[in-house]
Length: 301
Image 1 (cartoon, rainbow, N blue to C red):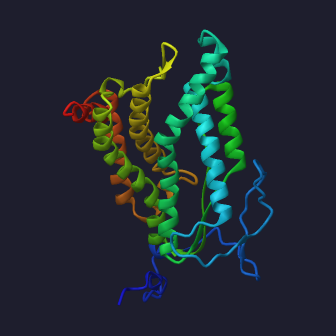
Image 2: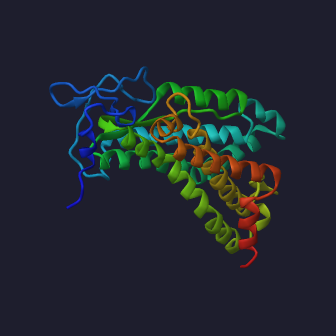
Image 3: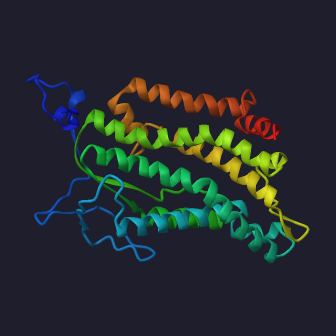
């Protein structure tokens, strides 16, 4: 019979070590069985004053409210990334006319959605699945303040720094289980990064677009849409976004995943964080480039 992970809560040692500390994560459950989330503000129809009903779905269950929040966060994230690619609202001065700026914005948004959207969404779903595996309630909730700040920075400065939201968890977990929940997100990003190299190479090869596997915003060429450049953009940003998002969340500060992972096991945190750093430095210095590897794969077609 499978071992119940909640058995970790029972400690034979009368003087339990700090590593076995039980965490209560975002637990604000009222007598009527509802979960209340501590979130401020509202945006795009998000009503944070209403309690969240505790559902009884399986591990893959997504409530209507959760789907709504995921859709809004993904939409705002995509808009911010599109604005980044065109230099924000003031980037229009870099184009011959506002029509070119707007056209590139519209073409950049689906590229960034396909490339970066899975890095964000699947990262959060990774947290959700492991949390529910340990018997917790877990649903994604968008952060209205983070969405507004992220879109505003992208619009006026042409840079993206956004905290679109997070998976809210309610329940009792041990320090080890809390670490497992935290590391699930970066682990998903690392897996997507790895599979993005061969799959991206195959996609580039089939589309004969290996020369576009770089940061190239020229999605319009001679008044026509350059699909090869768009495919190259998807491959590049898929690889870069998953590597960057995984690395950022491994930073051991504040509410980031790295702090929870380090709190659970410093050795695991160091190994994971060092792996991300080593790949980024290798790519930065030209020692190893995942894009070059994808291009080599593409040239076989």
